Each structure stands twice: as structure tokens, then as C-alpha cells.
Length: 316
Image (tube, rainbow, N blue to C red; front, side, top):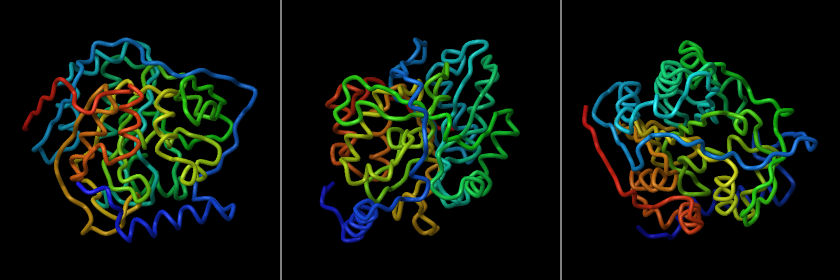
């Protein structure tokens, strides 16, 4: 796969850079935060989820595929303990319908919420820092209704709940405001949709964590965004990455809008290794993972492996 950018991508990137140069921000890019609360990195808690990559495909039911993929990795009870507070973090960034594939499929989110409660969770929280107006994104995506019906606490992110986090080992983001509810969760489940992104080439597990980031994240686009995305992984360890590739946005991401850019693959994949998960996501979009800068950087930082030792595929 050639690493040369297209004219469309070049124009997108110059446009994003221009916003930051002139002191402007992308929608949803700025927030306040408390400097009084100081946190260290969120670490993975030990669990018995199997290592590797587990892929379920074939069914036209996203929830069924999600359950099958998680069960293949050992099941939610290997991850969630009785009384746990669980955060399920989808992509709810855009004012788009599920069929437009700009946000995580609501049935995937609902299945994860239900499985967490079945495993003994006392509370499951669902939220994202939207780019378009949050109420529209939560509603039009279908995620708010689906997650609430499954019992989740669905909320808009509160600027006052960002806390300053020191990030040892980071190259650029040695300290940054991150969302308190993520940092304090017993279990953090990262469930992005797989899609094209004009600035980074790909949105998947690592890029999805920008929805947990406070302050002016728009400035990242002119400050080595790939290294910053990798640095955040040091601060927020995903206990499980659930890739929604039921429908994927193959072009004009991250917002999309044209049905012709959407491809239905009926696929869900899970992994405890975010690098392996994102490398698989790159392959779905016919990209070489090593051409995606934040994947290459994260692999070189020892945050995961491009090629997992175990890959299991299930067809329903």
C-alpha cells in the first residue's frame, strides 16, 4: 500500500492545519479542566481474557457478532467482576445515522453494556466527547437510546470532570487533561467503529481515545498528532478493544455522509492488544499498518504487536 497522500487528503490536512494556525478550533475541541486534581496513568487490571485477536463475522446482527467475539476471547466474566464500574467508550462524534458508519453501531454498544451487567457490573457508563453538537450526535447515532435501554448511565461529558494526568514515558504529552470517569473505571472497554480519517488515515482503537481527552485537542493536528495519539495509550490502558466493522466508512472520514462510502462487512473483532486491533482495522481498509504513523509509533514504543500470536475467526 503506497504511503503517498491523495490530493483530497492533502487539502484536508492543510485545512485542519490552517484552523489551528489562525487560532481557530475544530468543533468540540476545547474544554476546561481541573488543575487541582492530579492523576497518574490508568493501568490495566489483571484479567483472564485470552490474548490474541478474535473475529466474528457473517451474521447480520451486530449484537450477536459482538457476543460471539467476546465469548471467543473467554467471555465478559473473565474481564468484569461483581460490583465493577465499567466504562464503555464508543465513537459518538458525529451527527450521523448508523447506516452512515461515522459512529459505533448502537447494537454493539448495547450488547457490551448488557454483557457487563450480566458479568456482575454495578454500573456501566457510556459517553464520548462529540465533535458535532452532543445532543444531536447521541440521538441520531442511536447510541443513547440503545445504551439506556440496556441499563447504561448515558451522559454528556462534563468539562469539570477532566483531570490533569501525568504520563511517564510520553514523548510529547507528559501531562494532559483526561476524563476522570475513564481514569477511575474498574474496567475500560474501548469500542470504536473502523473508518477512514483524513488526517491520520484511520480511526480505530487508539484514535478513539481522543474522545477521552480534554483541553484543545484541535491543536494536536499541527503538533505531531500521531505521537500524541500513541502517548495517550500510556495514560489510558484499554482492558478490551472491540472493533465495530459491521459497517465501515471507507472514504471521506471521519464524518462521512455518503452511503457510497460505506461498506457492510458484518464483522466484529476484539483484542486486549490495541496495536494488534488497530493493525487489523488497517487491513480492513486495505491499508498497511506500518503506513499508519500512530500504529507504527505505538508498536515501536512496545504498546502492542502488529501481528498477534493468536488469531481466531468465527463465522456465524
